[in-house]
Length: 141
Image (cartoon, rainbow, N blue to C red; front, top):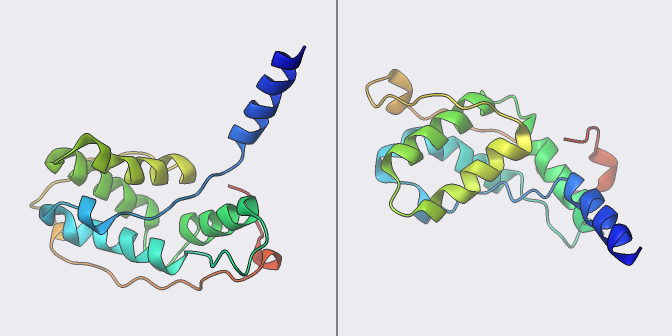
């Protein structure tokens, strides 16, 4: 009986978004700078100040909303390209954890990175407004 309740509680908790939508700069291979930089910048821009939001779930949802629905760049394309580039140039397998969390949290599909494509040499500018309170939450991802 207690095990069933515990299992149900854990399953419900796992259904919530746990957003840590930030790449560690140290994890990004030099070859991936152009396609990963916008994802890194967006993660920094969308980081919610936990002193302004009272609970972790709301903080995670606000960050996910800011990041996953951003329209200043094609986030799904750049996240997938960054993941593919990192996969091709990975130094340590755990360097892929953050980008894989981003793809999973946002529900982005994978794609293939080609170093000779135009996106490999140009970095778009990212614009995002950092969420500051729970009233800004308009979607659950």
